[in-house]
Image (cartoon, rainbow, N blue to C red; front, side):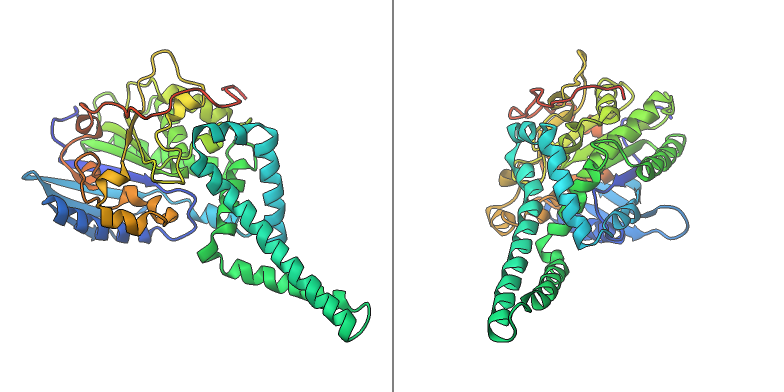
Length: 402
């Protein structure tokens, strides 16, 4: 169908980041936060569980500005791949730490990333520091226990006590990782870096499946197909959509194709030496007339490359770059002072704020974007790029051919 002035039906495909948890938590987050945003902004939104085969998802019916919109929401799941990549043991994780640190240091990527935003680089260094600290604590405790054993019980027998203490303490630290996030973040950064920016074959195959599902929706009877890529899911979405467009799978008279990237960490991958595919996909997508692309981030989110144009900073911006429109969610302005005080130091919670309610949603409202009567392009048609955006080429690698 031709692109309508008003959206009455929409398909949303949400691509999560590196997340091992079941996708149902995204439905509950959408339901709870959608209710809160509706109360704040004065509209109605109803989230209903979807049953049957296919992707995990839910249905939304919203009444906004007197207009009813029906949205079918799909989560494109790759959490099984994430869980498999996290099965590395303690020794394997320490090996990942050494290898990943070497890749970012030796390639020059880490130094260039520091030029852009220190927050996400500190987030990347955090698991290295935490794992080293845990290792040192375990070794120190083992050395003290071993020395006491040799001195008080039997000379030379300290190692018999020391080795089990190291193992027990490291296992204990790992059991606390739901609070410390050291192993989780280490697996996250190691997964992207293991092939120096190239996608593992299992992930490429899953991305191909996602592409087919989006292509099918584009042949359906709906007004807008909106792809949302969050965190690491943003760079997956870039490659999926670039393939989709290059293969001619976006009908000229079909639904409007839109792409919302939120909290993206694209430079963590695109700055690596073997990220030829991602760099080419960024280059192609940024000049395509087949979609609209809006990138939303916030300086208050220390886990994202806030306001960094992912195409420009990677050094692959074409002369006629159209996308993305880089805008700020401006947490300090869109959250009340009380809520900002509550969330300011909850770094991982802030990284999900783009999916949540805002006290002042005039500039960015996730629920109006995904369930409202305007397409993404129409909603931001008068919006100018953030004046604080960073669009200076910084990547040490710009090659787009393997």
